[in-house]
Image 1 (cartoon, helix red, strand yellow):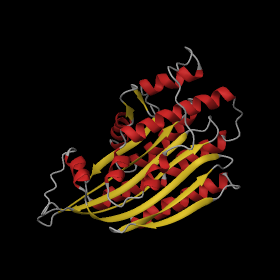
Image 2: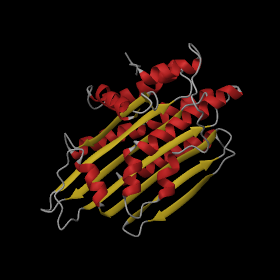
Image 3: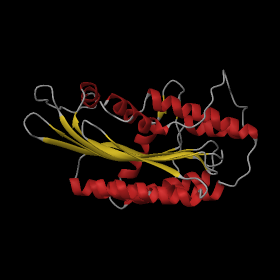
Image 4: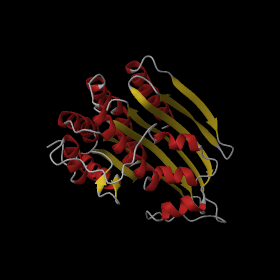
Length: 303
C-alpha cells in the first residue's frame, strides 16, 4: 500500500507538471514526532492550476480519544487497553483547483487503516474515492469521468460502482445548502472484505484510474476562453467547496484531531481564492442554474 500511494503521487504529479510546464511543485517532506511522516507536493499559481496538491502520509502512534469517538460513531467496537489504541494509517490524497472555470476541480484519496485492540486483535480497513466538482456542467466530461471509474470498479464486482456512486453523492452533501459539493464519482470507507488482498487490488484499480479519468478533461478545456462573470461563479462555487471541507469532511476532522498532524497538508484542499456573496442566486435557465440543478438532484451518468 505504501508503494501504491507513492506511485500514485508520482503519476499524478508528472501528469500535472506536463500540463503546466512553467509551474514548479514545492516538495516538502515532514516528520511527525509521534511516529511517521509524509511528503506534500504542491503547485501554486501556475498557468493552468491555481493550486494543485498531492500528499502522501504514513503515520502511526496512539489514536486520540476524539478520533476514536469518531470511528466508534461509525459502528467500530475498538476496545482500548488503558485507554490506548495503537494505530497505523497511510494514504494519498489530492485536490486540484484549476484556474479556468471550464476545467473542474478534482479530489481523490485512497487510504489504509489498522488498529490494535486490547486483546491484540487487529482491525483493518481501506477507504477512498475520486470525485469531480465542475463550475459549469459538461455532460460529455461527466460521462467520461464516471465511465472511467465504473470500468475500474467493474473489474472487481459489478455491484461496486452503483453502491459507491450513491455513497459519494450522499457523503459530499452540504446539508445547510441542500446541494452536493460536485457531480460525484465514487466513495467508500471501512472496506474490509472479501479479503485484504482483494480489497487492495480494488483500491489499486481505483488509484490507477485517477489520471485517465481527469487529465483528458483538463487537456480539453484548459485553453477555453472565459468571461469575468464565469470566473466570479467559479469563486462562489469554491466557497461551497470550503464550506463542505471545513464543516463536514471526515478526513479534515480526523487530521485536525490527530496530535502532531500537519495542518498545512490537511488544509491543502482549500482553494487559493474563494468568494461569498450575500444572497447570490443565478438567473433561471442560465448555465449557472443548470449545474445547481444537478447538484440538488444527482444524475446517473453511465446508463
